[in-house]
Image 1 (cartoon, rainbow, N blue to C red):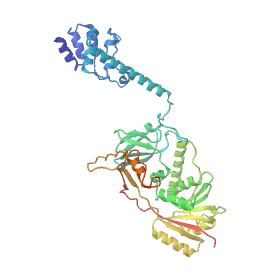
Image 2: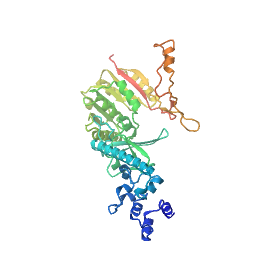
Image 3: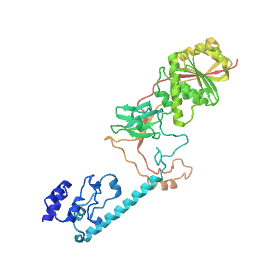
Image 4: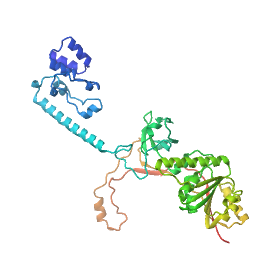
Length: 456
């Protein structure tokens, strides 16, 4: 009766109570007292030095090495807890069978842990994870690079910010802070949690994203319009292109990538503040690219502050494969540009509204330049949302498993192999996904006018 009371009170008692029991000579059995000293539930109990104990190792609780790494012991059943407090000669066969099972699991856990350690030792040392495969030209994130932070929730982009990684600074957001030092050395596309525990994706921006989020004064040539202009102008590697109106430098970057190392771009801007902004954005992208890829971005853009009309000495003796005009009155600059165009070359004009397009066409008619208008287009696009369908209560619909009789129906149908209605069943069944246009429609950006030089 006394032993059962002592054992019942011991299950929820800390080690301090054991010391009190020893002081009052409640337990006189040294073996039982040592077992009580080694019995505990706190994480600090496993770190106790048991070198002074005379208790055999078989009477002490057995715990896995893997559990000890996390500072906690394996959970014990009530029968195991009581068996640790009794001498071995009084244990029944059921307790011994349970203890043997426990020892087998401990050995298996130890073997698995050793295997994991060996695999971790064989992995190459570095900042990349074991499942991360390095591609040619990919490097870890370095200080000085331009990065993009994103956070999405419930199919909606909640946060996006482009910043330059600098030592000692922090990324501020409504969802917490991230130190720049924590991002340095991570692979591109890493997920880092903020001080509030919110996961933020840290990655390198592409060229179109860089042009959208870079510092700018005037409106830029948006990526969708820039790609259409490059297609109109048929710019290839090695071409010599003239750009009138540097703006913030967006179109200059797209032209620089299109012409490559063998080509060249002459970009002219009449306003000094716009010229300075374009040069800074161009240099910022080049420096970030060199840190990202370990190679230099082609330095093939020559920025010039001035007007095309007064820059005839600069254009003398030079020929251009194509011209990109982004200015309010391009028909005033065309007389100075057309003599330097090769026959059949294309001149792409970026106009904000249809009134400017009409003024351009009237100016071409009055000036009688050897140019013919081939196209006037407005580039439009729509974003789409594709995701699993939801019920009225907000839960996801369940997938439908593939039917086994689909193959039999296809084989017994009249049009055996040539029947278009007979399709192979999908391996994962019917997925209740929906696709619809994004509710936020993209507004108008500009009209593109394609002019081609001809010989009269």
